Length: 145
Image (cartoon, rainbow, N blue to C red; front, side, top):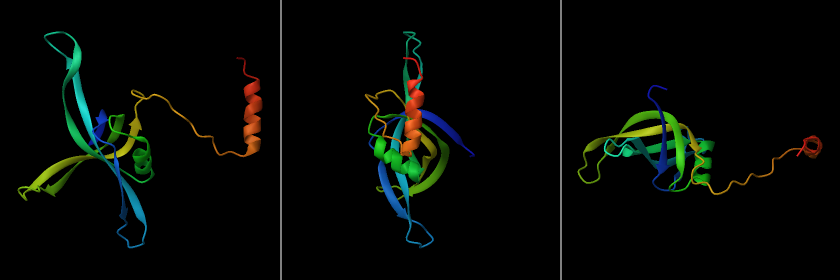
């Protein structure tokens, strides 16, 4: 990764998931999840001495594949996330002036949900053979309460 980016921010809207055909005409698709994230900057207010937000910036974040599917499924507007990826320049046409403009996006290697604003977490049962579950249950009986 050339331009390593690591930042914590809040989703401006719920992520959007797109399925795009692969270029090799195989009929297969890959998933792309796009989200806008606000990365706030925090520091000490010189007048009051209190820590607070002193600025920040918005970035478009994209992640691909199975991680894109998971982001679209579990993340919602306002979620606090940790983004690890690479900043990349793209060029796009401005819709009003038709001029070419530079856009900086983060192509994420990983997006992790931060535990702030989480009310509850529910885990689904692991898919293991019944013999493994029985063995684990017997191990739990030996642990003092």
